[in-house]
Length: 318
Ligand code: UDP
Image (tube, rainbow, N blue to C red; front, side, top):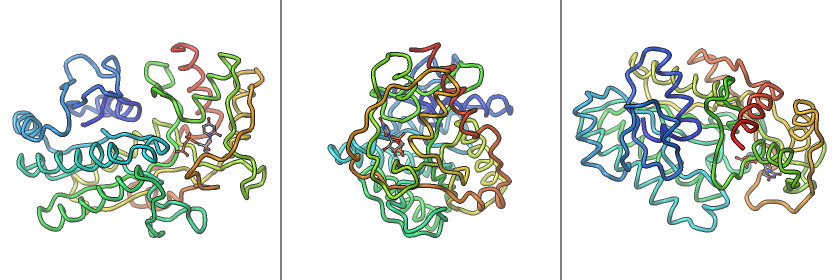
């Protein structure tokens, strides 16, 4: 696995180990945390190091790769597109080249709802037009395209999981969301509660019932489960495909703030600001395909459960 020291990767490592898989983590620790990876599993290595990756996969007789390692901030990608294309696209190409050289035939890829840009309707189906609005989204589209060619030419099968809004944390508080800088709504709202410093609502003039943006928040453990199902599907001979990973229910920024107030029993200090560049009004997944083809079911993605687990983690780690 690449990026296993990061947020979603570390939860997926944990679940894979619980299910009895033999896991090796490749992470350069530029964003991830050493303590997120169980002792002995971490190979501190960059995905750009094609020959080192090839050697490692040969040595470990790797059967499949789950590829998380990437930069993830939409806003940052609008300021520094080159970093996103180098790290996300060139990095993935290096990994794919190494997989080809080592004879590894299956990949589960962290893609994103950002591939759809500003959709013409919700819920979003996998067949909707691909029209990213940021270099981040574009970098994921480019890797999806590379994967198509690696399948056609090298018979490397892949599943692209297009995540909606990953949130929450392991219920025992051992793992959780710790981005630096943090840009995601739920951890920022929780920080506002803990610090007393207001969080900013990015725009309240959207065409939504309360004027704030609507997103589909999915518990990180439900997301981790989707990776395991995708991996098992590929190992069983499934052909390359793309799936949305979301719940089908959207929540506005104001609804998230209200849920945090309910869970914490405290008022959230907030101010209203202007829109953030590149934010679509509403992003909600149809996950029918993931449910029907891979048998996935969200189990912990009720908003209050997500917020409760995120709150338990934030209290312990802030
Ligand atoms: N958001 C906000 N204030 C913040 C951070 C986020 O109002 O400080 C809004 C953002 O505009 C979006 C939603 O919260 O509508 C979720 O944003 P996040 O960055 O968590 O995820 P994204 O949808 O960009 O992947």
